[in-house]
Image (cartoon, rainbow, N blue to C red):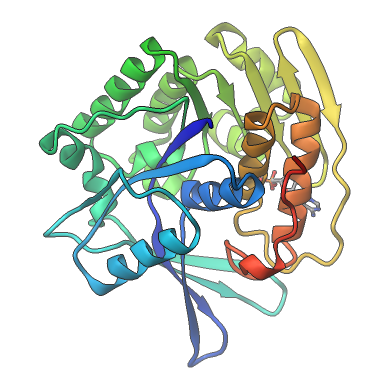
Length: 305
Ligand code: ADP
């Protein structure tokens, strides 16, 4: 059984139902991918690396991880911090507004706690995102890269999604610096067309491939909404069409769901093109529901084994 460790932050998600009513759940970019990966490929071992607090919401998240069969061996507890939180408001035109309370969250202490507890990570694949980097201070970012270095040396495959969120970075240059470092250590990456447009001004998949050409990445999977997926594996470029969903309810976590499905398919031995079609199907399901993680009972995208 392949073991994947996914590092990042899971927060409380509060979704506005009406002026007085909020619906509570648990989500965060890499956590969403972890949940969808496990749902797609129940035989895989998916561990989440993060820190949570000692508060009751953190306890509920532990329960949520249990329900989703996510391994919690690498979930640390901070005694002084709480779980991060965000709110989503959908207006009548389907546009979304987000508000975050995460700058002092427990997850921002993940690598301090990893070092204090002298924990070492073991896995076949390690997955992280630009958000996972952005929430850390600089010494902890260096610790993250030291962990990745060690994992790489021991043969783990490193997977990265830039997931650029301008508000989490001090400057765009800072984001560019750390994103580039992440690309340099990665074997498989999921650049989003929007991320690269905002971060580097890239307008086409070819712009992205040219920028990444000297970074020694085996597999590059460019997501671009319903436009399609561009894959570069070695020197071979492929375009995978995406069937457009007309009745989109909420695009939250589309990219995360795609990544979870793609990784599940790759872990089960499928080729990149087939994995992209599969990831697109998972994303297409997720965007027809509100919120990041759809009810388990409505999820029918398991990989046939
Ligand atoms: P992100 O959420 O990271 O911005 P995208 O918007 O590119 O990522 O969406 C990720 C994936 O979700 C796409 O590759 C595609 O498979 C799927 N997707 C997004 N929007 C649609 C849509 N309107 N119809 C069908 N699939 C979609």
